[in-house]
Image 1 (tube, rainbow, N blue to C red):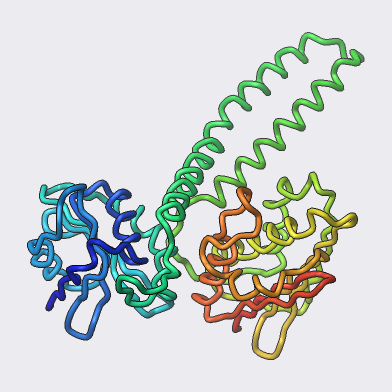
Image 2: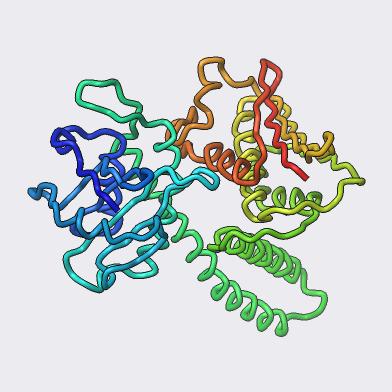
Length: 366
């Protein structure tokens, strides 16, 4: 495979691809990282990042030429790691890490790199071949580091949910011990009942968090849409409970089970529900409506709020990675990930908005 080396001006200009290369090198803690775009019989290096003070090494191109496909793969005595950036079945590019020492990369490194490809796909789809002086819509280092923190927080949340089970078991054990010392009619028993119910609720929330955060390979299965929506609502319930949200669900009883990745579609629904809840933060009476029915040969899921609507200047940006109107409270990834999931299932997600609320319409083929 022919490797087309980067433009000499690239080192001095930090465009979208270059920013991604910088982040990948920091993520993998390797000698250098590259962002490349595949051609018919070549691979063009568009971004390159090495340790501070080092410049592009042509030997890296020699190593990259050993790639037989776009990965995900760890090769060359674990000195080379590669992960494809895809949109559906189409490979947009490839992220590559290189180490001069053998045995550097592991399966965990490949897993972290694959997690990042979902965000990189959004950048690839909007980035242009940039040259110095051109206008750029690239993500900054702050955005990429923000994404790194989100990954870390997700891992820590899952660890917390796992660890909380042990102290809850200990708490309930001591409560049962104390209860055995009380008289049957002792009024303090009511306080213990409250503690037990609260601990069970925490345990259930932790279990749902673990279920949702588990890393799963893409798996197509048949599932009931009404059950999925019910599970999504239960998962998000602690998020919207303080806002006294009225949730109304209407699912066509005649809907047949559908096929897809159940957990991915549930994540898409959860993301939209959270957005709808936030949109109604300033509304006196908050109503969230979820409808699911059959529209010709498609399953249609409509999630609606009665908030103030989306401003016209924001409509074209809401599905872009890291775009948010929530300030520090928002990640800017929810709707972007939602669109990626739905499009991977060969469906569409559209938005209808006005001053009386917003509806997100998910359409999935049968």
